[in-house]
Amino acid sequence: MDLKGLPYRKVEVNPYSKKELPELPEGTPRKVPVLQFEDRTVQDSTDILAFLEQRFDGAPSLLPADAPSRDRAKEIEDWVDTDLTQVLPTVIYGTWGEAAKAAQVTAKSSNFGPLANVMVRAGGSLIMHQIAKRIVKKRGGGDPHEMLGAELDRLEAWLGDSDYVCGDRISLGDAAAHGALTCIKEFPAFARIVERPRLAAWYDRVANARAVGSAAAAAAAAAAA
Ligand SMILES: N[C@@H](CCC(=O)N[C@@H](CS)C(=O)NCC(=O)O)C(=O)O
Image (cartoon, rainbow, N blue to C red; front, top):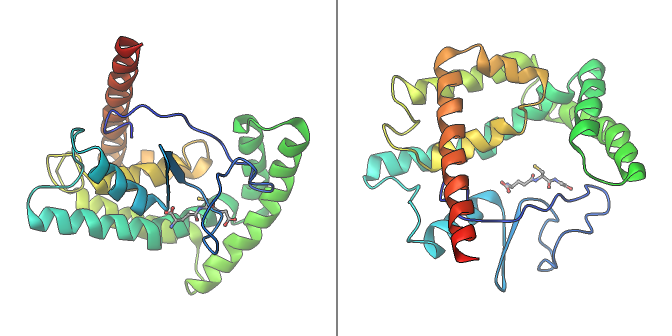
């Protein structure tokens, strides 16, 4: 939404009560992100991106115009879902030390009440530590930091010498990868990204595009008020 210059209001969802979630169709997972727009509720980041693309066709498109770049953008978006977002929890909560650090980071950024805050910090880290162990096992074992390194190698290869992952224009691939990596910005593992100069420059480039879009949305909202 930032990249498209669309105004929005963000609502944090308590991971235990999930009381902030809107009513969802039966049988669908009670997971974030969920987008609410007028009377529509859209779940899953991939479906949300597709919805935004279609519904706000006056906003800058994140779908590359040529077929090979479009295929690559979708391939990267799939990789974010199936690999990158799977590996990230394993480097944040993989060891007890990392899980304890994660509790501290969460405590700083969580905006829930005092009791919920303590539960999210302590319980969240315990649960996420178990989830991280399960993910490592499911992915055939190995060192989480090496697994992240291999995924960052892939991202770096897609980026090559270009400004963005699909060439010289920002796309869905950048939005998905940048969104996922932003989730670990406050954690020590983020240093693994910043230590790669091309990835660090790309990360800042996309962050800057987000800031520009978000400022445009704020200016449009102020002008309309
Ligand atoms: N494929 C989904 C994944 C959504 C997802 O796993 N969300 C996590 C947070 S990042 C969640 O809400 N987990 C809560 C739970 O599983 O109870 C997407 O891209 O939106």
